[in-house]
Length: 460
Image 1 (cartoon, one colour):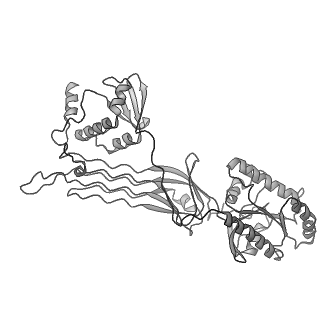
Image 2: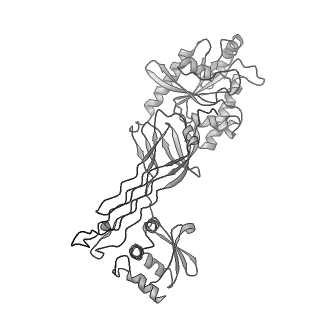
């Protein structure tokens, strides 16, 4: 593949981390303890993919596969909140498909300005001013900022074009697009001249449309032979497919009808493998190179057979220009019909965000005789927010977990005092020893302490 084009790339994203909240007490002369005034941490920046009409390739992601947004700043005293981290907006070509590491499609980015948030920044931690309540008038702790999302993604570009030119290598597709548009693709007399998709804008009457000249097909292309799938993904969005058939070929075993059947077989095979149907796309046949006398005779011979299949047939010569006007207007007619039947266009700026986490607040799984694993979005978030070096912060976490129902769920599951409880992902979980004799909402002693924890250590 040429060094100035790429239609597949891996992208690693790191959204910004949220800033930590601040634990601070207002102090001034004659008022040494004026109340908590710690500010909140700033939000981490998002990583956003945005369709940019001026970007035509994914090559930049091969050069720089890692993209990172800005981190949020920590809060400070005097009720000063930390600054939010800067979002990172990454330009992608129109027609970019975003997949996760397992190949599942997450978003199909079509239309200038369309945005997709591929990495959400972490929430900033609350400062102790925001955590104050009637029961906790002067918290001696703050919440930590949450980490931003990390993701490993696959990007795949599918060309946005109205008309796709399909055919064997050297059928004349590049010459044809050069003759009917301002595109100037590389042209030479050897197979696989076209190694990357080329686009040309064509005007026929009042209709303007885009024609894609993409790499040639050979038998077995749908299984990856030749340029294989590097070609086929680029015809999925086309409204009409034009078979460009070389009527002047001297290759043994080649003739227009056989060439058409081979290409159609590859398109059908790709439909089955990719799950994207092409059988509903109108077909037009361009019998090319009729400037060669023998080719003109062959075109006249096979045209009735092709028309009997219900195909529109146009003998053309990319070299002399004969028949190109008629072919261009035929393509324009099919494109116009497809546009009339298409649904209303999307707004020029569409922002796609990942769906919020749904389902129960937590899941309790027994992992041993007296061992349990707690999974869930909320418990996992709260774990990351907790400063485990501060007893009061740990006590606050215990209150939150109890209010969520985890204490009751452990009791119902038959947990006994001293049960090992893991919260979070099994490979990176925080471990607690469950003690149901420690009451929740017990109140707080000196700043940074929790009498429940002191009691538990004395009992131990």
